[in-house]
Image 1 (cartoon, rainbow, N blue to C red):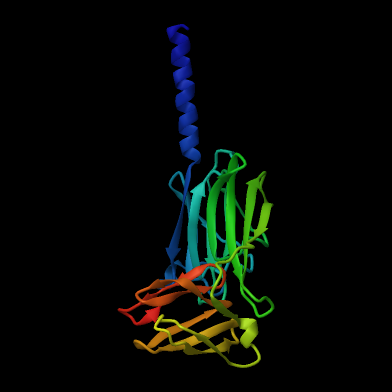
Image 2: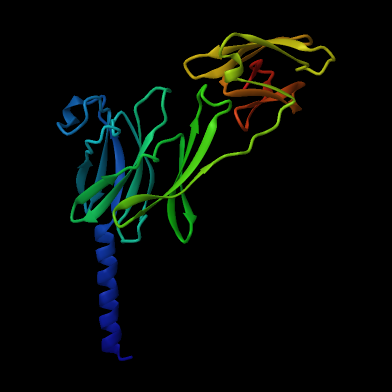
Length: 275
């Protein structure tokens, strides 16, 4: 290869690198709740945060009018090229605040020349989200836990979605069929009609504790406020679960508790409660 040809190739390579960098964009969430001067007519009514994309030093306000994009609490979960077109997407969490509901998720996609589209899907709703490598591409993995008195135990769903050619599509949708077994257990369904007392030797001293379990109507779950142990006195539980089960393992002298399918609560003597 001649020097002139090599020089031409180096120039071409430099141009391609420059073009790639020129199209790069960074996404940033900015708080507007404390500064009315930066609020925009394009914000939704109760917006407290805005999402910006910066391309070559120019800010673009991303302002979807979708009903699930509230602008109350936004978070950029991921930035990167999801569809392999050389442009960065952002996966954004939109939460309405409070603890009633899980966040909704959106993909923000730069199509070039300051043109941004936003995408969501009915399955992009849940309590956890990750970007995973599977099937030789990047996938958006959403975890959702559905608790209700309609089910004896919380339903856990894991959905994987792909983003290609400007569209979101479900690649797989799975339901968890596993749970940690318990020595004794009770569900929200069991106590929906009335409070129930269960008996279990929580502290292992040979005497069963009497444990009052009530129904927490708002969430459709079983709830124990306090456990009166025979060896150390009252212990705070104060947690609602679709299923409460005492399991074989112990921490600090008291049996551990499985909440729902597999969340384990353990006794902490410093706070004198299960957590």
